[in-house]
Image (cartoon, rainbow, N blue to C red; front, side, top):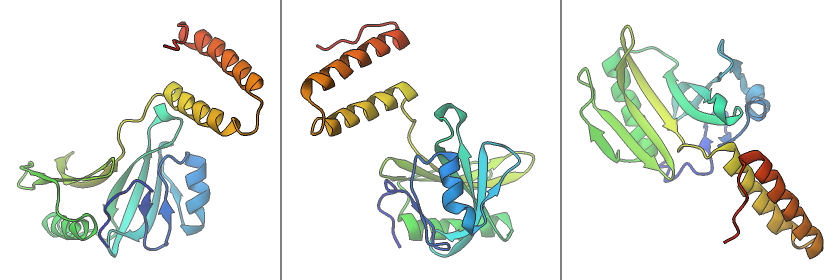
Length: 195
């Protein structure tokens, strides 16, 4: 399986579940609890043992960023069965290339291990080694920086407005936009500009 994009989510093989991006922690918990999802000691992480990346048994750590109201932020992969670092690195790399194709960038890394990176849609997949008391291998999938909560709310409101145009009389819709402008002014301290 060669994934061209991760825009719809990250596919697990066992259990066969597509994990959509942008889920809140509680939604992810509901989706994956039947498959043995574990709460980590940190309130910002959930963990799941599964099979992904073309048949590789992995532990996936779902890392949440507190600034985004617990929306899923990144996936971090760990090995279920511990191997020698060199053997693990080569095995992970083989599975990553089977899943994502040839890395987009390869840079010299530290400690004799290169750093590999793939861009899949708007997501970045990274594989390398860093030192934290000992050498540690990492495989991480990161989404782009998220917009602010205000910007996300504005986009949702605009989308809802277009959906409501079919059902709501125009004068009610215009009044709602006027009220929205007042609320926006109260939040930001600036009057909305329409030009």
